[in-house]
Amino acid sequence: MQEFILAIDQGTTGTTALLVGHDLAVHGKQTVDFPQHYPRPGWVEHDPEEIWHSVRRTVRQLLETTGTATGQIAAIGLTNQREPTVLWERANSRSAANAIVWQCRRSADICDEFKTAGLEPAIRAKTGLVLDPYFSGTKLTWLLREQPGLHQRAVDGRLAFGTIDSFLAWRLTGGKQHVTDVSNASRTLLMDLQTLHWDADLLETFAVPRALLPEIVPSSAVYGTTCGLDFLPDGIPVAGMAGDQQAALFGQACFRAGESKCTYGTGAFLLENTGSRAVASKSGLLTTVAWQVDGQTSYALEGSSFIAGAAVQWLRDGLGLVHTAAEIETLARQVPDSGGVVFVPALTGLGAPHWNSGARGLISGITRGTTAAHLARATLEGIALQIHDLCRAMADDKGEPLAVLKVDGGAAQNDLLMQLQADLLDKPVSRPQTVETTALGAAMLAGLAIGFWQDQHELANSWREEKRFTPQAETAWRDELLGRWNTAVPRA
Image 1 (cartoon, rainbow, N blue to C red):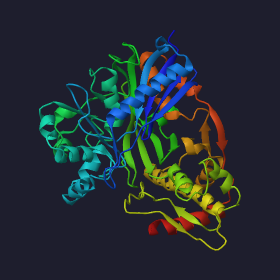
Image 2: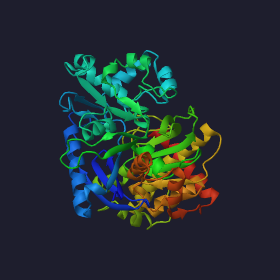
Image 3: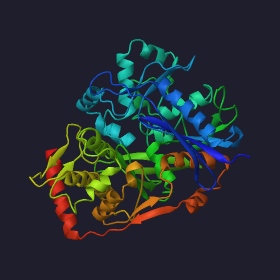
Image 4: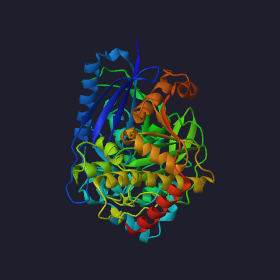
């Protein structure tokens, strides 16, 4: 009996595999980490073969630890870190170069070149994205320019390009399917948001041969079946794909326009479903495809903070204030407030709505009375304040504030952080029973494609809230904290 959807969540530092049942409960989870490579300052790479090895290991371990037979798997759903750029040989499926990761800044000069040429407004109008090394298009341009022989092999059709979803779909289907879903394609700087096709003018601008590119497909569909694997049998449908943040939006059952979620991981990502309308941001946010299901395309506004949980990791690893990330809440609760300390966690620049890659972390308001507890609380406030900025920008773009914010990710387990978030937004914050919403969204998309679930209405009825945080702070506290924050951010 086919009881489960296998969800594969390929992230920045590791790969997670989950088994999801009809009731949306997680019946097993395994994670396998893999190394990051830093060949030069500001450069970040992954070895695609190490990523693939982590996928094989985590699925094997999941099946072994849960005692699950492969015949119990109805379909596979994929979700992934969205912007890493992978090139591989069509003939043997081997990677042609290391993948360039979303954090890598090596294509900054290409971005500057295009900006100087006045190309950014047209690129943004078509793609909904800012011209930044964060996205995969400029990474691909860099590879084809700088790596000897790659451009000609691309023109000749010997190479394939994809984001991680595309690479995994290729490997899972034995090289039979070269596809990427619309949500991942919308992060490349190469797809037109309106037509949902690769754009000829953009391909010319970025000097990308069309022969390299995968077919753009819906987020919920059967793309192919497993073939020639040593850890799964042939014939399991590969049936759902979405970028990690879009998958989390789906996993939070934010199916209607106006529904929002924020994922608190290494960074923090706020997305709001805008329905069938691609809303052009005037406030520094991104316009992106959320998903395409049953022929209907949903769009989203997105704001990203580069540092969220990573700020807590810095307190742990850089300063040694805590031994584990979970201790930050206990430490921060030792004081009633931050004692006037403000921490702008711009450790790798500021993302939306500021987009200041030159910004750096700033701590202000320190006195002789400042303690580790004050700094811990200021760190949590800094994370929440960044999300407040994103929510405010989103409200400006839409003309209306959010009603409730659904949250997920590791840092969403911090009750103090979630209460601070509710107090700053003056809106409820809702945490689900299943916080693995990224993988859950991939499972939902795959299950819909094969009829494992009937429709989105069934999925929405199965979603469950674990805890709701309601605003408790006074307006004066909020105004004072926001005043100090707005003074500190320009100085970062």
